[in-house]
Length: 178
Image (cartoon, rainbow, N blue to C red; front, side):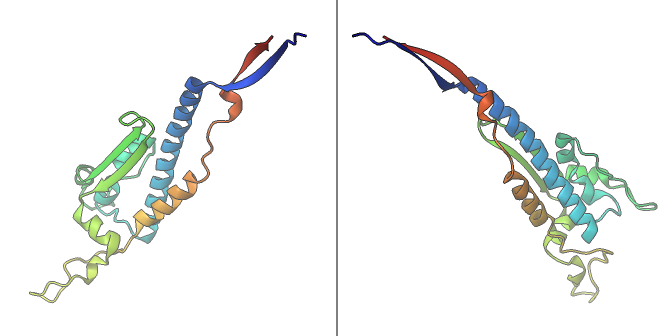
C-alpha cells in the first residue's frame, strides 16, 4: 500500500524578517531618541535649563538634527548669542545598525562646563574663597537631572516597542510525501 500526501508548512523568510526588523528598529531608534530629547528639553527648561545665551540648549542641536526636532535655541533679548558655543560643545551620534549590524544606538554628550556642573549641582553654592562671593549667579541653578528624566522616558518607550508580526515574514512551503 502506497500513501501520498501534500502538506503545507510555514517557513520564516529570514531575508524579509531582517529587512522588517531593521525597518522597525530604525524607526524605533528615531522615535526613542526623539522621546529622550523631548523629555530632556521639557524637563530641563521646566527646572531651569539656561536659555539666556542659548549655549546649553544648543548642545542638543546635533541630536535634534538626527531626529528631525526643531529646538528653539535663541538667546533672550539683550543676552549674547552663544549658540555656536553650545553647538561646539554638544556631540551626538546616531547609528541605525550601520556600523555594527544589529546594534541601534544614539548618544548625546556635552563638554559645556556650566551645563555639566548644573546637571548635578547648584552652581550658585560654589563660593570663591578669595572673595566669599559665589562664582555664579544663575537665575535657575541646578541640579537639573535631565539625563535621568531622559533615561526614564526612553526606557518606558523602548519597553513598548513591538517587533514585526509573523504575517509579514512567513512563507508557505508545500511538501509532497509519497
